[in-house]
Picture 1 (tube, rainbow over the protein chains, first blue to last red):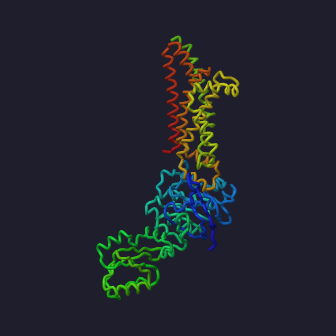
Picture 2: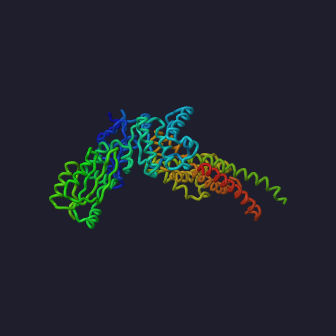
Picture 3: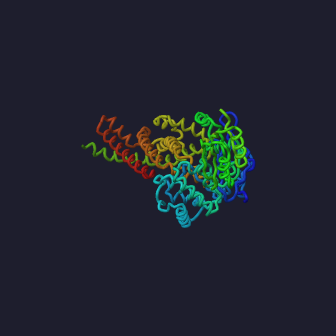
Length: 343
Length: 219
């Protein structure tokens, strides 16, 4: 599919009060596909927010370019800028609703800017509130709503002008798990029914695993990895991605955990990755049964990612060293095996 | 009781003069102060119209004018008053120093109330493509309306206070009445009655202000 957003050597520097400028986004080359849901992940301060804010020109690149559709963000006049922002909706972690306007007033605001007549506005607002499922709240004020309802208003408002692109900045981070699932389902529906390209900033595994098609990993202003969610997570190329994946999945034991495990288990510790390859899991059982080695599960976790199993299990293997070596060799033909070095 | 037959019409006239001074000052300084406050808030670092020289100029100007005791300010700006109003004496001429001082005070109060507006809401409006001027009148001011109403109520009382000092330059009003017919004639009841009227005016203003603010805050 064609990219709808293209970053070309895009860099954003902020002047620092003293010393050298801070590079929030550092020479990023990135294409975001039309119609996909892309997750931007990374630790705080990695530049995720700045990167996403360059899409609707809330931040302009200090060098390089950001192209959205056929517009280059740094070159736009006031009128063109308004047109761009009408095509890019945005929702926020803290919802950012206008406390002085009703739910209907909030949703209708972008339509006022776009110069819609009162009649058409009213009709469109009703349609949007229906779509996000809060029609009965039209006359209420934001402070009378729950967090999930507020985010629905935020979403309806962001969709008012039928944008091609929707940006979500940690849109579910302030919500409880159940409400998060509802809002994610709504985003999924927007993507499928309206064909809206969605870019979500998140630090929650839940968000990436349940709705994203593609993931972008950022560290220190750079995009260090980019690809289909399963590929990036199952086979991270970069150390930072591996660390991030592990910090959200917690399927591999940390150094402290290994040390603790060693106090209880004297055998050799081996971590075996569980992946989507067909038959890999039954092969795992066969291999374990086919050697004269005793295996005990000591750590691990498996979950679904893009409808495919993903995770790892750590075993304690006891038996003769040659037998264990043979088992590890055979396992390695099916999946990634990592022996945790002796303490 | 014969003295009140003579005093009552004078008291009524003084009351009207006070209302006149306070009304026009609130109207003129209310608008100019709002503009000044918005200018201060939006020109600061990270503001919608970020402009360091403009911000520092306005900021220093407000800081210079505000601490001057009003009674001294009236005399200090006398030449300017003469230039603008054509005279320095009378109820009308005192509108100049009153409005000038009140503009600076209101400007600062407006600025402080705008700071309380969540920057995220302004960002949301920008993300929707609202122009900067549009954000000021359709987001910034409505979002801060509750605190702004309370700020203006607070200032109203300050302006009543100012109007009392206006008597010094022949501005008339209740303050002048209390000094001339009460203090200077050793007539304590006259002073007391004037004080009671001023308290009543202020109380009514505060009640109305609180009510409007509550409506604006929708609580």
